[in-house]
Length: 111
Image (spheres, helix red, strand yellow):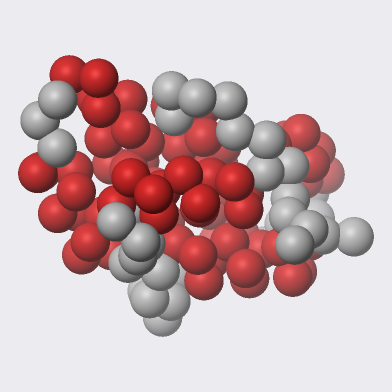
């Protein structure tokens, strides 16, 4: 599956072509990707890493639970990334998961 890269997200942010809520979402995702402790190349890879860490689903309540249930020091950057990415649901309250938001962005902006 093709997915937006972090570089493409940076270009989109500077392009002026993003709708306001999409711009907010891209900004959140760039911060969350930057906070992830391992290198992330695409939005799809980020979702896959979050799914692995959160146990398969990327819904708001699952991600919130994972932030509070993870106590290992080595998971602190992942927890920080999830805390940032939860803000995406402010702009997309109609979507049930991070995966759904990423699929929307990929479909709309991947050209």
